[in-house]
Length: 338
Image (cartoon, rainbow, N blue to C red; front, side):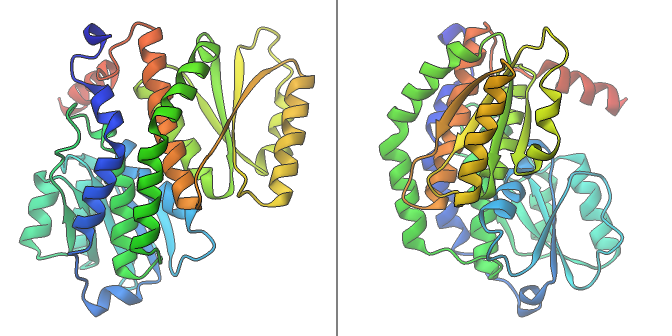
């Protein structure tokens, strides 16, 4: 295994709880001007792993958000961005060109900015503008790969928005969720190892619902970048209105549906999940299920976040891939810079 993991991606994956604890404490020191606390919408600008916080917050806190959150994965800001908007700039490295482009456009329109980063140009911008940004030391990411700083970006977004008053989560709830993650890590790893052999050779389609919707998006990305595997994701109940009819062709499809289940889903969604598995089975498509564990929705989100990290890492090893390398992304960026 060591020869396939020279940058210690396993170590970074195992440190998810440490990343969460660190960034949660860091976020407590943030202070926002009163003008920041009455925003009507938050435009979260981020790419790849740096956008994870927006996906999670939008689904995990959907029922209690005090302002709308828009994930903006592009160079520009939406036309409605105005003095009532808060531009949330999220870039682990601080050098993501799309995010820096959004930062420039926010400055041109004199909009309020905040965000999360480990430094770089974005960190300098927060300091120069005296903007309330969350700048962290990525000491619990030995691989130095931005996408392996998942805890920093997800809990960083939650911590920042909690200080802003857009969401409300207590210190006790976060501490308990992280403790449960630490307690369950070995069980999560064991379940990931048990499942990975069944996934090899198939195209995984991750299916989740409600507060775990953001996790499916993240897991899809992890399959792509870490395991070098094509993957897709879909959400209940939306997929029940179209996807099931697409299971028939082509005849040689190599799909595996990975259902993310939870005892905290609503009763209607629990029934839909079971019926969806029935339809998938009747179409002779393989499926597996992972049941999120934890005493709160936040805890279950972290549980699934960890599971996705280990599952895709072990799949990379099965395929004989170095999980740290992203040669096509690197090639693309080099060509784009010319």
